[in-house]
Image (cartoon, protein in one colour):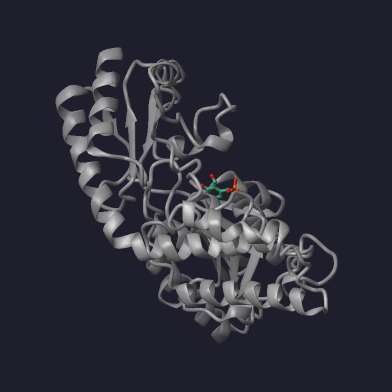
Length: 378
Ligand SMILES: Cc1ncc(COP(=O)(O)O)c(C=O)c1O
């Protein structure tokens, strides 16, 4: 029997149509898009069509879309691409960012700004964290562990107000807003102007597309230094022969995710409610972490007091159910999650917590099996 999968925040299976769209670029249309013969030109034009389609979804210009090898790489380009130009400047990041933001940010003068107990960025604290030397604020669109949707609009307003003050006081330093939208693209709109962001990271591997593929939106006028230097591809910002197959797959995956966004959000929201009702009845000791109101519809994050989450995860795995104890990239890390610590959980509570993330394959029946099995184990 196939295992029941509840770890869609870690990886999504590649959609069958996406896989089919990628297939021709391996052996048939394998050409280097920078080569000059006709077939290579055709591949270049398909790559540029893909870029234009991504741009359309973001309400951006094609030249503002830089394809990358995944979310980590796009985050590194955004952060180091800005910060490496300024020796005296600082960066402000939220306490619940993914390591793919935190790690590059720590290479610079990095200020961590707190979140409230519901996992949303504390705007007053953020305002206090930004000073006259801040050039970049990085605040994720939605969190990968507790599914919290962050108040990006309000953050963008704050950033704009600081820019106005700087212009008035003659401070020439820019202030940019970056958002990591890796977990958001299945469920939230991605219109960059309405969000008010200057840089936005996308990740194909979380939206039923290929892994090691994504994009960085770079607003016109934002200057970045490349982190991977070479032959000038991607406007010189991400050098190396383009992976056209991945870019085409990513683009179709993004189109499908955004077309399905409302229907799938509604369906998963119903399943989320069902799961919470069953948790209340069958696991009354469980505590939900993170905001319920401002939450991705596919995320349930529970603390089960007194339980060891590693043990629970393994017992569920033995019964054919796959859940996570934290983010997959830090699954080997035995330290309690920095996200759970940031919302005020003790080490012990953090290590008694499970992340359950749903996706296209999740059904009402699979939820019932998960909760009954968990109740049985407990
Ligand atoms: C919010 C967020 N940012 C960045 C990443 C990194 O993506 P990747 O490992 O695909 O490069 C992930 C993946 O877990 C994520 O959830």
